[in-house]
Length: 429
Image: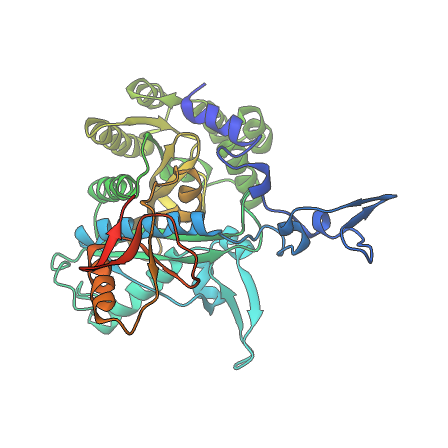
């Protein structure tokens, strides 16, 4: 079994790095009858559950406690700084938008999108489940406004060759959790490139995903490559319902299920044979032996990407069934795994113009990162009328050290700011 296959088998049982108390709780699990004396009544026994069960949130939604939220914020800053340094321009769309703009004609996105009625206009709006359709909408509008000349209209000197690069970071929320143990809300960060042809665009965006993850502190990365174009070509002539079931079975590596769903379709047999192939250069050679001529250019793209990504360091393999995610991808796709979980997912798509992009769930990244050690905060008693104290606090703030103001008369343990004969000084021990 390939590394990706092993990860898929273990992830299905329990998400790596997530303890049971972090797993989302549905309303049915958190609202049994409550007695007048508090707690939860189960028969003749009264149970006092943890605090987070006494005030449950809606199913598959959860707070981010300070340690986790702080790690996610540090990841966000480092990731965006990396993207800024590589000429990606930050785009911040609204959370709610017209439904059609958010779904981009994708059935999976339509099912995942929260829908609501706008009290101002009476129109149906949606809460975004993914940033990509909004970036696509913005790029189209910007190009139309600026004469389709490749200038995105946002004071950008980095797109003179017609290539536009955007990045984003914000919450997305889904009507249904992607897996039973997942939250419906994510902090999604990612990037999109418009106007970059294959396979160079795929190479740049895959490098961006790996570089951004490394900057955020994610290590032990390996990449899995596939090509949605191959699968689409083989399933193109199937009826829609048959095609959807065949592709679902294919993404699960269920060769027998693919054969059963495809019935007597010859391409169904080809897909069933393809879904068990994964590995390095030998997997590409095996696929070349039986795939039709129209699929050979896609294999050339995968060979190029695998070779270049492996050359830069890290594991890179081809896994033809690893095409999960939303169905708008049309070309090469990639998934970065980090020690047992999906760290980033992306690839090429076409919605009137070909583009490439990737996205990362910052919450999941932060959950798997080790906590960072911080120096103890300097305890500062309040003496605002003392000019020497004001200067000492200002110097402390400029130094970058954490400080904590003390509001009672009790002496705090060091490090602390203490008044001496020569002024205010930090007592370290």
